[in-house]
Structures are given as structure tokens and as C-alpha cells.
Length: 225
Image 1 (spheres, rainbow, N blue to C red):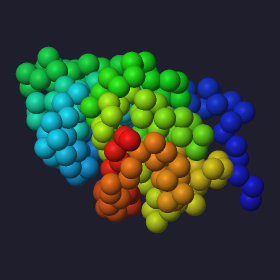
Image 2 (image 1 turned 120 degrees about the horizontal axis):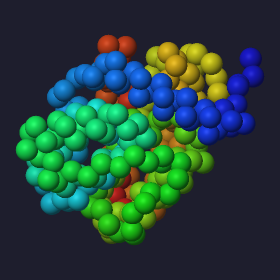
Image 3 (image 1 turned 135 degrees about the vertical axis):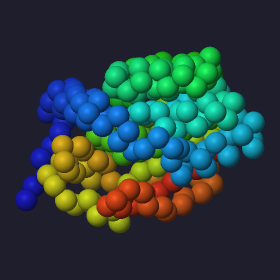
Image 4 (image 1 turned 90 degrees about the vertical axis):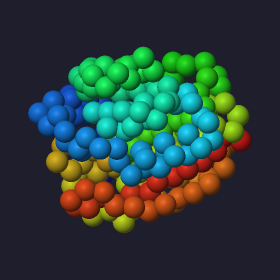
């Protein structure tokens, strides 16, 4: 069966994904739990050890990793395209006395990041890079991350890969994008990882599992050259 392209109505498609995420997260306020994820804990350890204090988090979701970053004393700009969860992060950070180091921003990462060059020490993202974005859009986003990082800054992100049980399942949208349960996931091979690493040095790729399926992911650490 030929893949169904998501490009003819990209804006409407992304709007639908945004609404689906917003509704799902609103109905499930602790969808992924309240404790920081494994890659979130790893990122905290790396950033604190290297004294990388100003962090951009892409796709903050419900904020379980945001609060972990803030709790470690880091200054966090949390970005997401769903406004409801961001408001929840602000409430949680306020309750925990951490809101003074938090900035939130609603933004579509298909657009250039609204930050000056070399304005962050580090970037962290748990599964934003495997959302409903084409390979070209992902490469552009990686270029934007490289631009806003200071020289030597770290980018730590996670993605689902070809070994995941949902790879190849559900409607095929082309470009290794598949829809399952209403959510579109971009699955990775090593070639795409290398493409996104242009201008970076890949320091580590670690395979791990998460959730009940379980999801099979890579945690990728790369340093801006």
C-alpha cells in the first residue's frame, strides 16, 4: 500500500495533532507520571556536572522533566505547542517554589526558534524530535538548536527507532512517519541521527525502553562544535 502523504494540508494536519495532544494531556494530567524520566535525570547530571545552567527544553509536555531541571537549580525555558500543559507546568513550578527560574513559550518548532544566537548552554528534549515532523523539518530544527547553543553546548534528545513495536504499524504517512492511536510518530534510523548531527559531535547513543509497550528509544547526546 502506498504511503499517505501528510504534506498537502500540513498546517491543518499539525493543528489536528496539536489539538489531539492538548485534549489527551488534559484528560490524563499525569499521563507519563510525575517523576523525571531516565533521560531527564541523565540530562540533569550532565548539565550540572558541566555547569550548563541555561537550558532550553523542547516539547516540555506536562513538565515532569522541567521540574527536575528546575529542582537542580537550572534556568529553564520550556517550549511546547500545546498551551494547556504549559500553564500546568507554571502552576506546578509555582507550588514548588521554582517558578523564578522558569520561562514558558508556546511555539511551533517548524518555525525558527525565537532566540538569539548562542543564547543557551544546553538543549533537552524527550521525544519532541520524533513527533509529526518531516526529515527536512527535523534537520532545520537541529540547525536552529545548533544556532542557539553556545560553543561547546550540549543537546540531549530522545527518539523512537526502527526497533520499536509501533514502527510500520498504523497508517503510513511516508518518511518513516506512522500514525497509531491518533498520534503520529517519526521513527529513526542511524542515517537520520547522523543527518541531524551536522555541526555537532555525537558523544553517545544509548538504547533504552520506556512505558508498558515498551517504547524503544535512543538517547542521543551531541556537542555543538
